Image 1 (cartoon, rainbow, N blue to C red):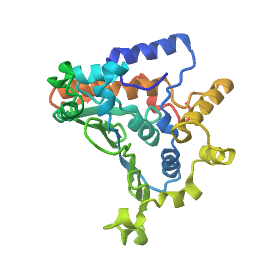
Image 2: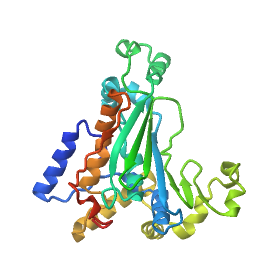
Image 3: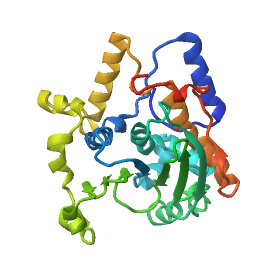
Image 4: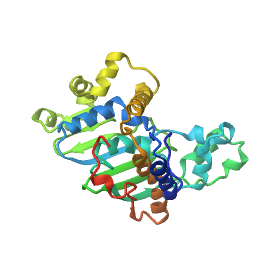
Amino acid sequence: MEVGGAYTIEQCYELVRAYEETGVPFMFLENCCFGRREMMALNMVKQGLFGEIVHCSGGYQHDLREEIAFGKENRNYRLRNYMTRNCENYPTHDLGPIAKVLNINRGNRMVTLSSTASKAAGLHEYIVQNKKDDEELIGKTFTQGDIITTVIKCANGETIVLTLDTTLPRYYSRGFTVRGTKGMYEEVTDSVYLDTEEDREHHMDWGKACGGNAEKFAQEYDHPVWKRYLEAGVQGTHGGMDWLEFQLFFEALKEGRPMPIDVYDAASWMSITALSEMSILRGGAVVDVPDFTKGKWHLRTEEE
């Protein structure tokens, strides 16, 4: 199943029930979980380099103004959603890799959420500048806020911050960041910072002095899956994530193993959209994140 946010929590339960009643193998195609840096950071976490993980953040930060504004012409679903909804509408690209780091649904789970939306101004400005002849959109007040900030609390005490940022001018970034008691990884600077005297010397000019140093760490800490992939020759789109995603799906399917991203992951990650909409409508109120595993999250392991 491809990625996306859920319109209702009931949709997520329907998905889980369909799987549990039929037993049909299910894989959620969140390709960002298979990115090279995301998997390297996951490997470093498993090896303890960052110490105890305390906080993770990420975002879907992608200028989609043209795609949305020309949604009628291109039959793109986003225009309809941005006109009528206000939510974290595309959470899984940033949440997926974080959920893997924090063992969500496998010894940990998301328990509460609070979301806040900025005003909506970016699409209107873009349409005024680039689509003045569109009588329907030129005077439209969009519902979807330009920036959505979602804070999630986990059962084991960690926090997650997700940022949706798609209707203001900006560069593309997923903002993937992992923070622990001994160090961190940050996608924006593509760097690893460890609690060492050498790294502390550069903490004031980190981006300039040490940005991009993750490539040095990759020589030792690339995930084993990616090491094999690099040796075989990276293929496919999105930097190879798509090919790797399908390869691991097919292997699990043929060997009868649990899926790398299963139905409980899909339901919990997708539910963030509906939950954030609920929270925003209530002025940023804290809402509960359902446990789609029905209590099995604390018994499941990384292989399940």
